Image 1 (cartoon, helix red, strand yellow):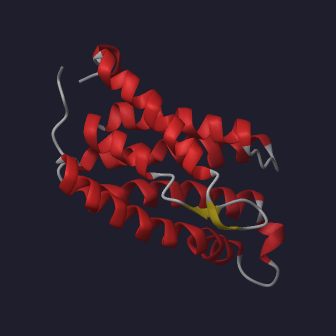
Image 2: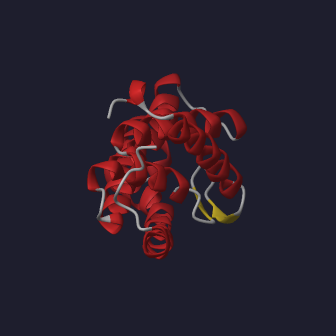
Length: 173
C-alpha cells in the first residue's frame, strides 16, 4: 500500500506513535557527550508503526520523528551530519516494516539501519573525537555503546507487544 493511499487510521496512529516516541526519548538511562542515549524504549513506537503498517509509513514516520528529535534536542556539528544523524538515521527505523510477522528481526533491521547512519556520520564528521583509534572503530564503539542496549530493550518490549497485539498484519480499515 502506498503512503498516498493509507487510511486515516494509519496516519492518526503514526502521529500518536511519533508523539509517544518523542516523550519516551526524554526518559534517559544515560546520555553520551556527542549525542546518543539509552532511553525508555523510545524507538519502539516507530518500529511498531513500521511493523504494523509497512516500510513506507515506517520510513516516513521515522523521518518525521528524526526531524522532531532535531527540533527538541539538536546536536549540530555540520549540516550534512544533521541529515545523517536525524532524518536518515531515524527514518531507517522504518526498515523494520520489511519484516512484518517477524518483530524481533524487524527491530534488529531498523536499529541496524540507524546504527549504520550514525556510524557513517561518526566516521566522517566526528573523527576528531577518535583520539588514537581509527575513526571507523571509534564510531562503531561509540554508537554501539548506546544502540546495543537500545536494541536489547526494544527487542524485549517489541516481543511482548507482538504477543499482546498480534503484530504482522496491517489493518485495512
